[in-house]
Length: 230
Image (tube, helix red, strand yellow):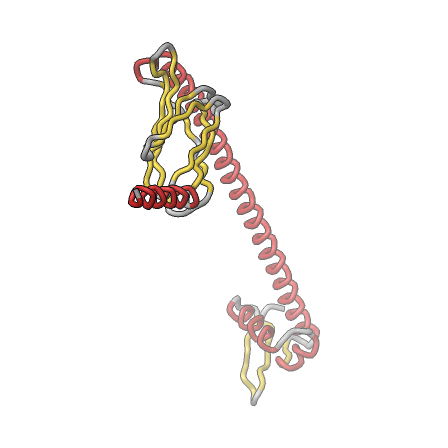
């Protein structure tokens, strides 16, 4: 008799400990269109197995830590028309949300096949429209790139032409100074009358010398520039 009381006491303690360490698994049951499904039969393979009917589309189980399989079935005239099976591992106490999506039974899937075809057609149309948008975007991007490149090229040519014109003006000014000096002038005198660096003036003289317009004669530490075309 005493042993029976001890056994009952231990069983009660273990039972209460199991409840204290239980976790809650709950969620909502949907169909393929993500609408709540009512009256689905839901079970979980605890020991003993727990079964319930999700009247409002929601289910809930209290379980201890472990690995479980949850099954949901939608019945019609004693036949399964849609079902789903999911696994879940409980490692610690807490609340676990596991929503379930019912998939139609294969034998009842004639209408669902048509739905899939329509969905594929819709997806293909969306994919085609997306591809067209991408192609248009690429064409516009290429057009914009070449437009900017062409614009920059024109700006570069304009700058070079302006630079060339400025260079020609400087050369003409240099020739005019030599003419005013009687057809010959020292490089030092030229630099006094043109607000340019000595290196720039040397390059201009070298260019005129290359064209045969002037002749440069070394004299002491300086140069005498003689105009050959008067």
